[in-house]
Length: 119
Image (cartoon, rainbow, N blue to C red):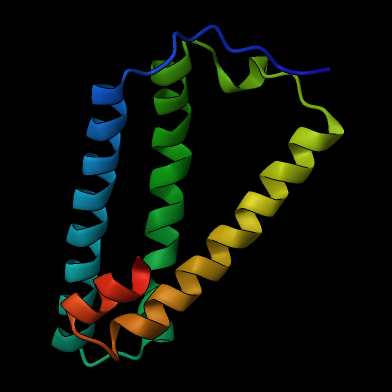
C-alpha cells in the first residue's frame, strides 16, 4: 500500500530554488541562534530548551498548511502504512539528533566553520 501524490516532477530550477531557500533559511537561523546565545550568555542546551517550544508550535500551526500548499492534500488524507510510520519516526529521531548537535556546535565555532562542518 503506497500513498500516491499527484505532483508533477520538479524542474531543475524549482529544485535549485528550494535548495537556495533552505540554505538561506539555515544561515539566517544559525546566525540568529548564535546572536541570542552570545547576547544572553546561555549554554546551547539552555537556549534549546527556551526555543524548542516556539519551534514546535510554529511547526504544528504552519505544517499542515504548508503540506496542503505543496501537495494539494490535507495531512489526514495520507494513507499511513507500517513503512511510512517507520520512516516518519526515523525522520523525527534524526531531526532531534541533528538539532541537538547543531546547538552544541553553534556556541563553539564561528559561522564559517559551522557551515564547513555542516557540509
